[in-house]
Length: 271
Image 1 (cartoon, rainbow, N blue to C red):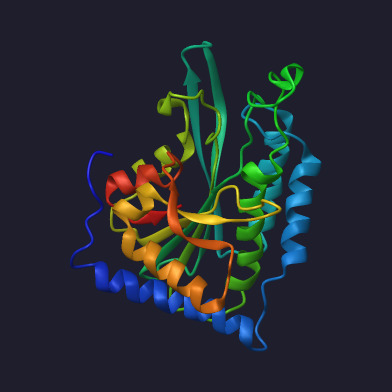
Image 2 (image 1 turned 135 degrees about the vertical axis):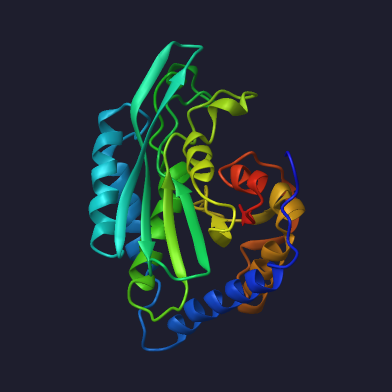
């Protein structure tokens, strides 16, 4: 990390925004407003997997991009694609048609909130127990599709509740392309997006990644704890109050993930 996230004059506004936003979502679950539908979210995961692997440059990636754009266009106030390219200098390969998907709710409203995940899948199953599979793309049911599926279902709620806050759901491309030990080849889409926005665009953000385990246990992540602890604390406090036992109140991982480019810029985003 190059610097710590500064939470000083804006910290109160950030925490109030997060508290209020969580309250709006939770109240919607307790009233006659739309409720989070887990079965529907799971169906969104299945639909992504039915497309096949969605690694950069693949036919599956092209189909998935159309799938996400069409889905959010029916729910968000505006949807646009941030196009970019990436060159793997090791393999001398360029991917010219990468894209982040940005779905905006309540454009122009401040403060804005970032909810994000990555939509691409890993091009090689290099950790597969079977060596014969290690050069094949993964399907990405958990690593990619699970986070997107939750955000898709949240889009159904956000589009129907009366919120004074602006919300952007952003799906990053080319998160999982890299090789272990080389962070320059991971989180390419989130780097491009974070570089394109001002530091003050978001009050806070929450990244969802690999949240589809059959026996889900969500631990605090070290970068999130060190650089955006107030956001971490409030999310875990809310989970405890709701009795959501999958949230475990201890630090277990230090992950270079899509939240790190935002933390480096001073935007409090937790994983």
